[in-house]
Length: 319
Image (cartoon, rainbow, N blue to C red; front, side, top):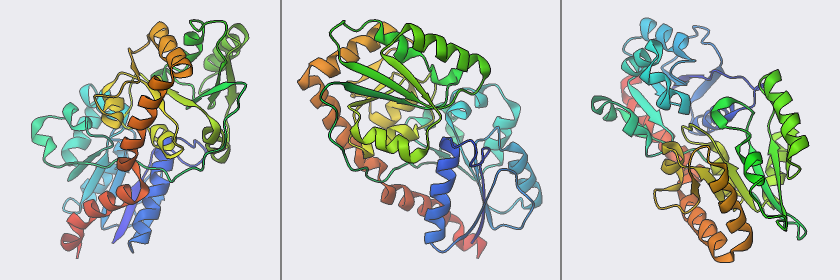
């Protein structure tokens, strides 16, 4: 099949949407499909369109539906789609109606959709290949935060949590990701100056991110909303446990019984969990073992299989 794969962000943004689009194009080409990855649809004929982000890709979604109303249209819902836009944005809601299939990236995603839409919804967990571990430093307990500095990520929560650590703690936090505004950059500089356990590294190449993960003791994800965080997949692929904000998107990735959740925006509780992970081997082992069990859902072969099965639902129609 000839597939148009639409992502609202190109390679220069290097965010989760782009990484997802790159992986999916690879999986689909391996299955014998022809894939054109674009930020905006150029009108080139396609048997099927996959659009990441209901609101941001709506122009392409509407144009494809108008030109080819009987051809399959798959819309992938991101965190801002699921937990904000479909509840208040007309374009996002229209995208839900135009789509022949909806894709969510974790198993709590369908809860946000009207019951009549759930029958056309599929769950496809994102994935990452295994990352070989490197021996961690003995003199530090390295904690990573990965993601661009923007409001939805609550980017300074981990920095604030370090203020609640005991003086004897060996925890050092590195935040990898660029600021998406001048205000965010200025805030990061101020926070770094006042909270010395937190270091902002700025934008870092993806290979360097994976190398940092390979030796880290812990990843923290403090987001206010997530559709299915790719950084969780990468952490689990590197055998790194996670502390995560208690939001539906993270529960859909890590399970309801995960012991590493903290209340949204609760710096003190996050500080307690950080300290427990550093000082309590039994607690750290529980985090580690649970993440190891969830890893099976987020392997590349699983993601590829689910994606190919989804496209195969329409292959006989296209033929």
